[in-house]
Length: 130
Image (cartoon, rainbow, N blue to C red; front, side, top):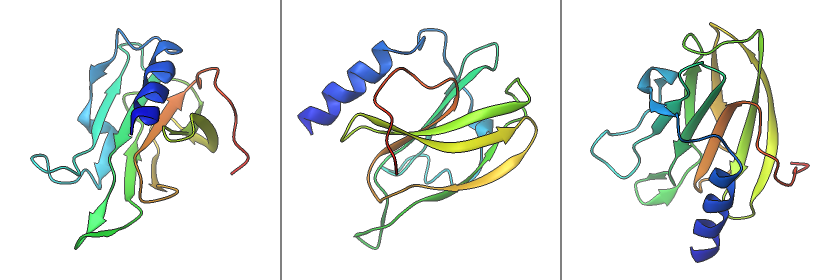
């Protein structure tokens, strides 16, 4: 857990995170219970060039489960927006392809652990081959 927190710190230090504002319209479905431990957190910068969606560990009936959710990119800018996963346990970034502005696309976390889905330019951290 301590290593994940250090990795989160390094991740955010590499990003222009200060201007991010909450934007829960980024997740169309799969937000989780807003008062529960599985609640999704979403933020983007005012220009719409960077968005982060934090997905905490998911459990279904106390069993770890991968999480499925749909992203809505209407509040973002750009034609082909890069999508990428950040793994806070290993401090790695893995490409998730690209998404077109205005498109809704379903994503699924790679494991049942915590993940960040980024939309926009990825931070300069080690690239994974997942």
